[in-house]
Amino acid sequence: MTWLLIEIFVFVLAAAVFGGLIGLGLAGSGARRRVIAFERQHQGLVDQVQSYEQARRLVEARAVARAAAEAAARGDLEVRLVETEAAAAEYRARAEAAERRVHLMQSPGSSPELIEAVAPVLPQADGGAEVASLGTELEATDAARGKAESELRRIEAERDAAAAERRSAQEIESLRAQLALSERVRAKTESDLAVAHARAEAAMRTASWTAPGTPAAAAAAALAEGERPTGLPAPRNGKADDLRRIKGIGPKNEGVLNSLGIYHYQQIAALTPANVAWLDAYMKFHGRIARDDWVGQAKALIGDGASPEAGA
Image (cartoon, rainbow, N blue to C red; front, side, top):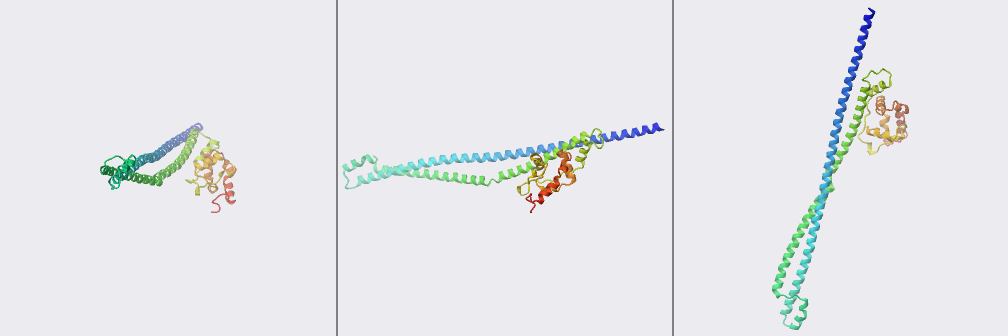
């Protein structure tokens, strides 16, 4: 009878151990699935950030190309305008000289000697015919100059419109804002992914039988029972507190806390025991947060007015 009871007890114990191992295996599988889902979400955010960067570079390249084309067109029109002005001045000078020659030849008191004396400085032409020809050329030159000036005004109007478009820069600013938002979402996702990895590793470590009271069991319990602190997307008023004034927080730990959205003494002072357990397991401090009394130090700093929000 005693052997029968022993066999039944051993059978029940083996069944309980086997069931526990199966449960831990299922938990580990679920953790792996969550890790894969986090990785996919992270990759999607990375692709979105890259697409935003490509769009921003395309907008900037288009603005630079348009400015270069406008500068080249303006320079060509200015050269043409200068040449047209020079030609018009030459035609006017020739027309005035021809008119003076005709007037001198038609004057009753002019003598052949006077005409011969001024001949070297006056153009040799057929009086009125040359004046008419020069007048026609001058009109054509004035028309060409008017056309060049009209084209120049059109180019300047297009340049002013492009400059106004560049000054507004609403599209680029919108893309930069979306990029910053994506970066914050990506940082949060990476943090969640790190937590998922830690939980998966803890689940895999405890998949083999872990006796109660061991350090591995305590770490797994802290991850399972702890609660992640609520973070902020950015520091309030754009200025974070100097968390390194708290004993136990150096530059590296301050960066980890900032990546979790913790920027101010008030956030640390408001940590619950579950938050402390979660942070302690996440940062692998083995109870250091409680030993250094981060919560008490943060409250003391707030009381001393060290935080900008203390007087608010």
